[in-house]
Length: 161
Image 1: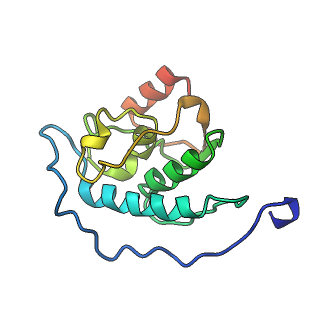
Image 2: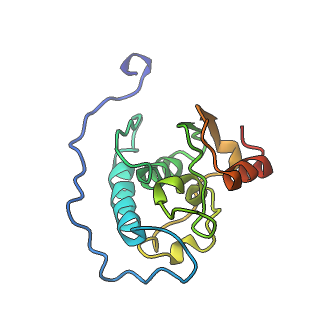
């Protein structure tokens, strides 16, 4: 990447040992979003950390564990670079919604959050900071093979490939 003009810099890992969720609202009745406050607060920390490194002419390459981190990483990148496209390499579409999710596992929801498909997401515990940053034209999937029925319908409706 350096040969084509991108600056390269390795930064220390962001460690989220404890997250203060004491000021977070409760999860509304009927929504399934496990550990919502922790995910929301953690993603804000991640977003702020990544945003600080999206300046100048650098390419942020983020390596992380849980899929939820993309709520923070993609938020930072798309805020800094509105025209950035997202290549989602995964067996799952991660476009579930707290209203329809069978499991409530948030690692299956980041694309729905990022696209604004989670109604009033900024009213969920820990997500007061959040604003959707993506549209269907911003994403392409590679490797999908295990997609829930509701996700299939959403992908078709939004004409996402």
